[in-house]
Length: 292
Ligand code: HEC
Ligand code: HEC
Image (cartoon, rainbow, N blue to C red; front, side, top):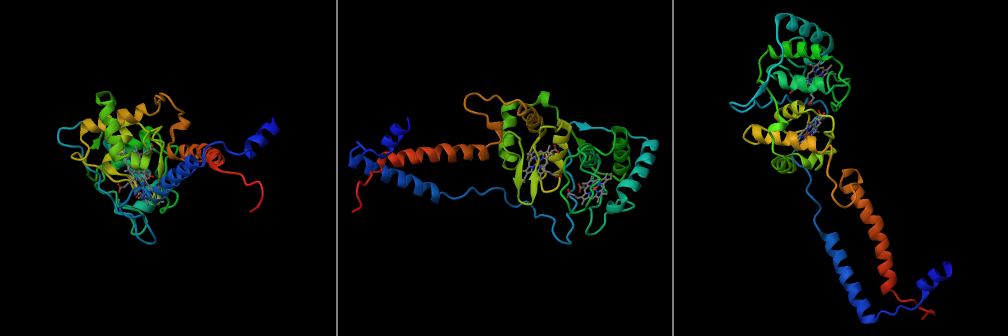
């Protein structure tokens, strides 16, 4: 076996030199074109990362469009009092005693409304440990009734109604299209997450449709927010439907390689492609028997 391989490696090529030369020229041209291709632009203009002493500005969430469905949370004087107490213990050190925010630490929560509060608390992003770290998805620190209490208290300072999304009313093809256009640049095409400038875009495998609607309208951290003219209610429902679909993608043909896209695909290209190049080099190369 080894002998056969060594013979194959060292025997004189039987392909005529003209053919070998033209193959080499074509491959070299392809390589030059590949190397010269402009790098993809990636995501730009993220509004700047929070840096140094500058505090991330409070982004006021976009209200749902006129006539669009909204999510209502329970509200009562007793809930607001409970929310007030929880707020003073868990949030006021950064967001201020009366929601006014603290310069250089955390934004004001006046007028953010129910959506951002529900989003940040139900995904376990708040309370933050350190004001300058990126809020990441976590085990929620509060149970549902405490979250409702905090929502009741904070939204008593005003703000838009919370958006909502109903995937059963969405359209999968439209959702795929809208997600590709608006979200995939950061979250990757099948929502497996990715890295953007100064932030990590999470995978959306545990996100609920409610949280998707809230995230789209408020734009947490460095994510942009989208109003009802950019993404209307039907598109929002469709995006939610598409995100749910991505949890069970239909890998028709080819390897899924965990559906995380370019990285494993690049590795396959490198290893299989590289091996193929060595083979081609062997095919077109010619062995010198004696030094000239
Ligand atoms: C510029 C990059 C960018 C774009 C574009 C973007 N996002 Fe995001 N998204 C992020 C980042 C960064 C976070 C994490 C925010 C944080 O840590 O608080 C995030 C968080 C989320 C979350 C919360 C996920 C979870 O489980 O905690 C959802 C849902 C979401 N995005 C949906 C969307 C949708 C839908 C779109 C398209 C309409 C979109 N995003 C467009 C960067 C982006
Ligand atoms: C260690 C400081 C800290 C603590 C404690 C904290 N936060 Fe925050 N919070 C921040 C920072 C910093 C941001 C801005 C993060 C960003 O840009 O996404 C923020 C953002 C928010 C937002 C989004 C505001 C907007 O502009 O849309 C909400 C809602 C919120 N916090 C709620 C809470 C609640 C409720 C609590 C208490 C349970 C809490 N936070 C505790 C630091 C803190």
